[in-house]
Image 1 (cartoon, one colour):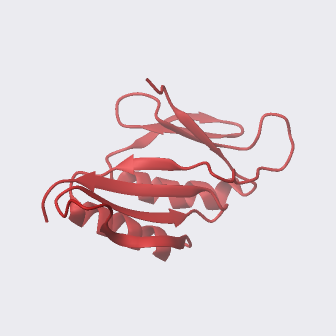
Image 2 (cartoon, helix red, strand yellow):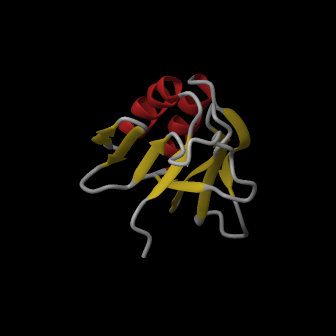
Length: 125
């Protein structure tokens, strides 16, 4: 249903350094490089990191979040740890959420621009 998402940045070099490494952990790469940013994906456009088209400052949306689907719990842990090492801020440590111990497992962080992301997976420990 969703074609792709974009996140704004006021510091494009910092954002690209963060997302090149982080999204590479999912096998994503730069598919399109534009003057105002980059569109990443594995096979098709999935996530754009762009300076706003209107020229106004980028701001993190309150209540907005992009979720990245991991292959397993170890990848959730690794991506969250790497995000923090790259300058992200923890918004929720990796762990199970909800009553099913083999259900949703996620971690939350903000990128250096303040955008909120989740990395998650489903399945047994």
